[in-house]
Image (tube, rainbow, N blue to C red; front, side):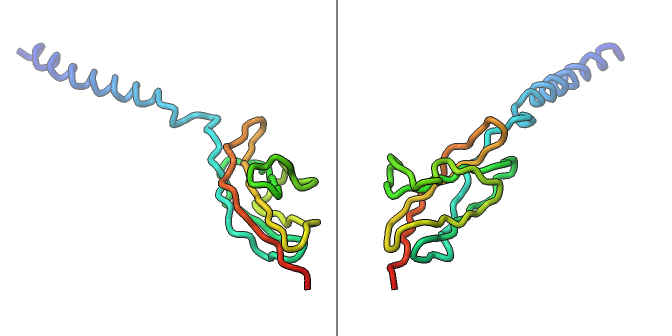
Length: 129
């Protein structure tokens, strides 16, 4: 009778072990998780020829790529601001034209990995005095 009792107990224990092992096979512990997309904040310190743009830090990112264009589709870029690589979470974009609409987007990076691009922010520089 005792032999049957132990065999009955082994079945639920075996199932529990199998479930535990299979749950460890998930990608939760991926050493190279996909970088999340940075979230751009509203521009600050907007002037005639410059503005400051910032975004939330991406946990595993070591660098960011900033694009600035006068075109919403980014067919052309402001000189020096095509995938401009920086390590912080803000940048002052300068050398711009007054009373002009600009578009900004950013991606996070780590080694050779890069996140998807952020949503685009539109900023208009102030008019000349």
